[in-house]
Image (cartoon, rainbow, N blue to C red; front, top):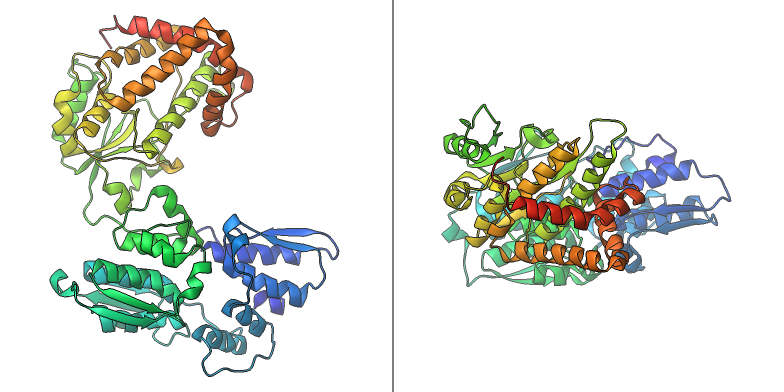
Length: 538
């Protein structure tokens, strides 16, 4: 409406839904468009932006060489007119005959067109559906700010559906609504109940309602959901298979019903609800930093670690080395349910020099570390974790204490790797968070002597490994480098693979630095493996 009337566009921020940001940015670019010049507008996977812009271009930019494009799924969407197409036509002043059976969405559009610019922004009732789902399944009470009892939105019917069928009551306040379900879980569940609900005028509510019914043992007959096959995903199939399919509503509905949703899958939620998060109800964490001479009683890092963790009182401990730059999230720890189901969480590390122009040895370490980190994160995401680092690691305190006997106190290194092995051997869950706000920074060593001393210490624990994934990975690395020593041309195969790993973490790495590392690596590996057999002190 602001674009149609030539008014200033509202400001947007990064915490707003993608639908709003994408449409706003497209309209802003159109205002700068010079007649006759080609323009391409990329709309991600925002069907709302696509429908409104199709009409807007036809009405306000007829014949202009403007192309609308987006993600592959958006390009697959059914091109037939929808209620959003009709809504856009109404907002542009087109006379659309009133249909007694028209959807509430169309009615809302008529009222907005008539009332502009007096319309007040409301909270989104379709997004509130996921919290109704959560309360229906788990019980309890939530306050949802910004919801209005006199809302024009058709999806406000979610309050009636959940009151009638699931016992969730809504009480409106001056600035929102309180939703509550105080029934016991026994009363909420029933294997004999059957429901028939018509979603023709509220299709966005289907994923939340369908998964609520499934969790409570209720058979649902859903009417009027045929068009859901053409949304961000085939939502009918996605609900049946419990799949996210890069669909924001599916991710939210599955999370509220306690189905597993990975960190990567949660990213699509930003499309409509960037701040959506289900927090663990009781969670405490303590940061632990073993420091030589301060808390090790001159008995080494493992003794210091044990002493600190035994003295801890929190549910989780977040381990750091004393020479790391702590991550941004260190003072604002928030985890989703998915994260907190893990007993050990691998966090990312980044190696950076303190100098504006790193020396050659520093550049080689940074490149090597990038490859190690990329491999670490990739394997952990596949539930085949082969590495972790005590420089940045979160573990359940009770799990660490149970595994302490397997940390090999006679070996000066490996408190982290032996912990990973023990956690996997006992069947505990290992997860990973690959986010910049959780990334700690480590510094490269500045002398070759210190470098080889550290690497020999790392290699000294290798003979004690028992984990199948770790051993398999180690053997693969060893064999590949031995083959390179025997046949240098193997580097033509190895280098592109490992350079890709390096660039994934350190895009600025020069190719010749990575190549030099590749040439030297077999010799370096051999020296460290042999030296590690005799390295008995820190």
